[in-house]
Length: 424
Image (cartoon, rainbow, N blue to C red; front, side):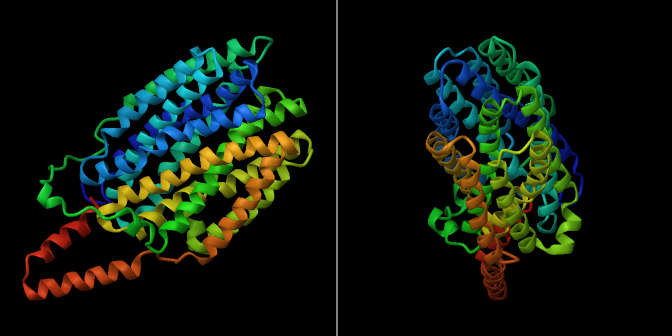
């Protein structure tokens, strides 16, 4: 199966990702509501949301290294098991400490699944297909983010918030397990490489110094932090403004639906604006809209703000994936994607904790002002990002390879095989 041919694997991957992400999106607000029912305050909610990122933080790069040297698909079922188990055990936990631990397990499962899935898309897509295929892949995440909060809002409520939120977490675990039905033939068979054939590992510092990689990582961090804090803190805003959990679920799903709409029209938007302009404009508008959530607006106005914000946030993740993949050395793409996810987890660990501190001092709407500032910085970085990241470096590598071919030396064939590896 060559890049650009049969894309049945991508459809199956999107379906599996929809169930896995749907479970996480259902569990995150359910964890917040259950923690509130167990006596948590805004600071404790921020800490629990941050722990979701801490355990995966140390696993991302080793998982990326392993994937660069082998197959991607085995990470998918491992991720589903951890997500499902983390959801169910969070629902059964009766203390805030235990909830934080199982939230970390859930985060590790999500990281494992995403590293494997993103690496599959990077390998099995031709370079000109990256924007489109990453956009389609992230539709799976948006579908999960659309359905998950609605399901959580339908189950959570009434006088016994602890019981209904626990029920929602157990249901999320069952939903994650459904992803197993689509985890077949997502990766074509590959022959294992000998240690000699693998070549030397590209150092992490070299990947991080490649033009385009740091910018892509920061933009991804900012956009995901915005999505994550929306999911974790909109229920808290709803509690303070008297908005029912079912309405909060609809608002979060409206944001996800707008994100899907953005990704469905991403190809014409890229033709119209280009990657750099699209990232810059969406980050600027997202910053203004995030700050708008802090205003005491009625529910209908909040719905409009979240819909527009969801559309703006839809571009950041797939385009940052393409930026990182095309900038990174061909034989270190999975590691580069893992570093991007590490940045995401740093944001998920630091942003909710900072949001908790800010909310405790300045009120529950203040974290959204912080997100607006973060997205403004991202827009400046996007404006300075190269339109075609990594092109000069790849051209230099191709020139070196061509010289070796003319000289008839064996290393040229090795370099050529490494160049093809990223497009398997």
